[in-house]
Image: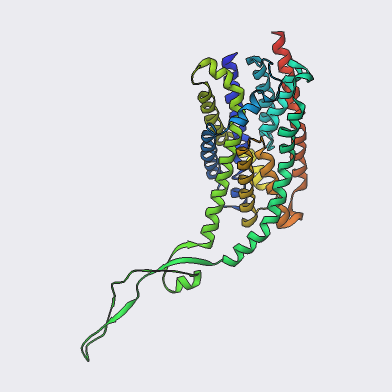
Length: 374
């Protein structure tokens, strides 16, 4: 049972990477700043970095997804966590297969409830904690991200417009005439002088044969890539502890003194590989099937998503990067052109969110019943 549990942890982390790694880089692909393969590699690297960092700063999340949802004194054995992993994994794999960006956080929460109801009945579950620390962050996060992106995109668009076409350039020394005797030909040489750093417009720099150091477009593009990478980092930080928590008991049985680092290592590698191998389907949905994403809107969506998920991770709140990023993308689309938002696809995604918890709970409860009969 120990090795089955560890295998399921790796499979869930793989499925999580396949479904979630692309959430930050979808705006890069949607705008055309990156090809899908480039975006998935960037997502895998940044997600792995966030997962590694989470080992040291994720105690609250590990506790919430290991036993905080249940009354003290209840025994959570390997069979219980196998049932939980089966329920969460089954739904995430199915959703990934059809390109639906569902929440692994939501899936694990539903699976914990389903297995807990079978194992301990409703009296063993801390319902007030479920509502306050799980349900509220999951429900409010997409609405908050949508509203913030919609409001922030307007002033950011104005700032980008004002700086458009401007640059900081290096102007080379100009030739100067060399003094010569009367009647002798005049020669031009470059006086020994340092190049000049100037700020101006692209056309002015070109007229002076200047070499651009930073242009407005390159700066915005760099910010876009950085903010997308920060989404991956924040996602790894927020999601890795949730999955590792389910496998810590088994990992400790295998390596008593190094159980926690073993669990985190397995989850980190599996999340990165999952996104690289099987992340294209959900990436296509978020990048191309929800709404057109101009530069300002896509950059704002990435920046808001990374900020909200990082704040939640720091405070130990189990938000869903899926919900936050999808809400941010829809908010960006509303600012750009509400008529261009593909509301049918949005409805499908919201429906998949609604059924995530009950489906995961049913799968986990069924698995727990079967394991109890063995």
